[in-house]
Amino acid sequence: MKNADGAETRIILIRHGQTAWNREEVFRGRAGVPLDDVGLQQAEAAAAALQEEPIALVVASPLSRAVQTARAVAQSHKLPVVNDDAFTDIDFGQWQGVPAAQVQQQYPELYAAWLTRPHHVRFPGGEDLNTVAARAFAGIEALAECRVAETIALVAHRVVNKLLICRVLGLDSSHFWQIKQDTACINRLSFGADGWVLECLNDTCHLRHLSAATGDF
Image (spheres, helix red, strand yellow):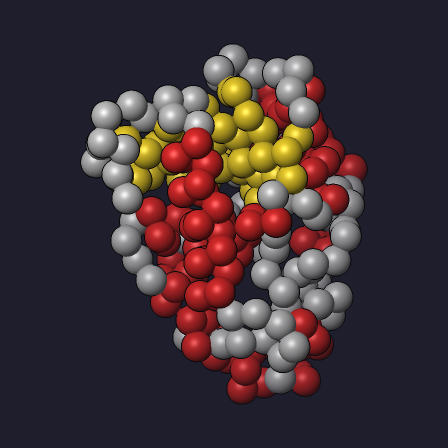
């Protein structure tokens, strides 16, 4: 898909701020885990970094951690947050709410595959990466088509963001682990006559003044 008239749509793709389950390395999935104190600070820092951007629309996954992060960005632009199920987190099934160390003990072969061949893994009772990539990319293409020449802030999740960036770069889901997404990071995508372009990846400069380190879990 390309924008024939050459007008660019800009997507500022943000990962939500930190939650207790990020810090404790617990698989989150569809659980409604709120931001912790650090995550709230990260959300405010992301909002401050984007305050001068001409954002016309703020979209978020419907999960609370994404909505809280998006709300900080939206408030600084006096905009509402629009929830979109296309960008909700992957369904980790039986792994949801379980610490990574415990998952490794209970599902040693599947966990090893997740770390080495993620595109071949379907989580027990949950989704696989290709399913998530298809729905999320359909969602972002719909935004680009209906909001031509506008700037959109989109807040989603580690898995969703990694897969969207893979698709933008023309990569399949096997490259999942080659994309880093720290909590509250900012990515910049554009869509125009040449199709999708990745302009900025995993920017965390706006978080450097915070005492807590970001992380890609």
